[in-house]
Amino acid sequence: MSAPVRRTGGRSAAVLSSIRFAVEELVRERGAEKVTIPLVAERAGVNPTSVYRRWGDAAAMLNDIATYRLDPARELPRTGDLRADLIAWCREIVEHYRKPINAALLRGGSASAGEQETECLRNRRTEGLAIIGESAALAADDIIDGLISPIVYRAIYLPWTLDEDLPVRLVDKVLAA
Image (cartoon, rainbow, N blue to C red):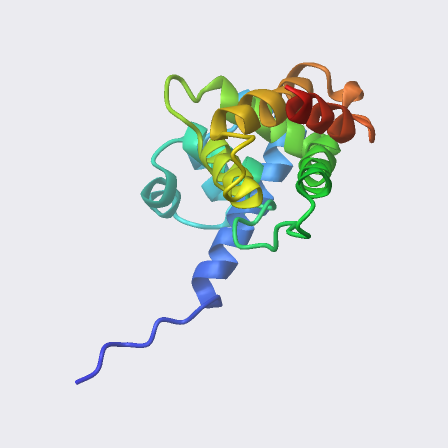
């Protein structure tokens, strides 16, 4: 007897989509600090245990949903020009967090992350390392400290400073160091 074939999408994808939509609506309406798993489950029309089983708590849920649009499986810039690739990547991240709902989700998720490394940070580190490849000029900490941290800081505290020139300024500073 063969193993059952796992469907991609289907009911699971629909449930996840309704949960993500519910979280975004609730954050817009109430603010991230007032979003709870029971509220999300009610709005999404799912059982709260489905939400708890996937995320465990509201902080983990907010962290995940804050970054889900930055799909880890998406194509990353890889033209062979390190500077151009880093700028394109940073532009994508800046554009993502220029959207008020994404910045609100990031604020909510990061406020309750505690001492744990967030999924957002792990994903960005992995992406940055994929872009720099074998470059001896940069390390993971250079990517996090010089590119991601300033973008996230601005998204949380100074969202109006996420301008189109920011990626160029950050990348040039990191590469000059």
